[in-house]
Image 1 (cartoon, rainbow, N blue to C red):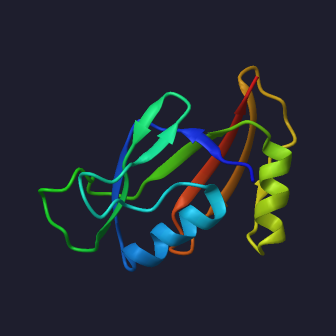
Image 2: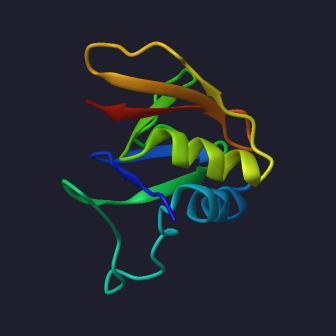
Length: 121
């Protein structure tokens, strides 16, 4: 299964945090939120990342901005990842342009959050 290669850390609110965490685990290969400090976290190519959806209305204590968000995940094989997501019924728009830094695709998670996939050159 193709997996995203990594991010540094990302925290956000969700209407259904557990369900959204499962979606990211099933479709992008990101491990669900650990249930204890002894549990292993998602390990990416460049290091560890905690991927933790927060419930809506969490307040000012969460590392979340006042507006919406988008995230970019690195992938090793964009065509394979796009095909895998499409096979699961997820709409993926692959940009046919090769940019100086790689190839890109756009999709959304079940709550409508913007996701960009990037295959670096």
